[in-house]
Length: 218
Image 1: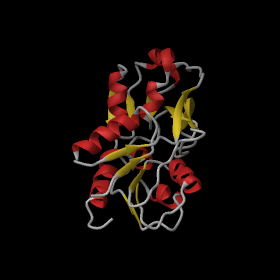
Image 2: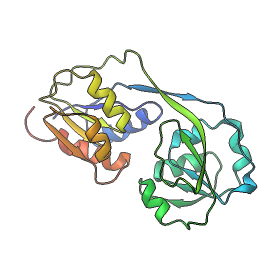
Image 3: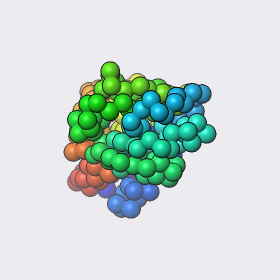
């Protein structure tokens, strides 16, 4: 069985590693980024109909300002983000499957949404969304990337794919499990295999990675 390499930053890294080990996988961890909280000002909640959340880190790093927004119903992009919102005392009204465009398509166009996000975010919904940036992902200067020979690498974001492409050497015996088509493209060429998860979330990505890890051969 091939080893699985996880690249995402904490605290998502530990959560993914636990899920992967529960699938019987041998896991190595090498975060390429670290999460850094940013200062931001919470606006008047009366100006909005709901809170749009596309990242669990946006909630975790929001700080004390989040307490002023607890009356706003939350529209979360996926289950992990919804769970982080509930842990923070927020009321989740809508939970998507992991795709922002799909989530926005089921919400009334008249809703005034406040989006808490990371510095690197998708810009879907411009014109109906007011955005506040609560964190950024900073590259780890020397992450100590191990030899990728014969491994399966789980890529949780396009930024991680791009950084992996910059750092990786030999690729021909390694497989990529990517969370999205964009993340897969960012990894570049030369890999033994690149596969994309059925849904853009951690559960689907790890299921894909498990299948790749159990493929015969090195």
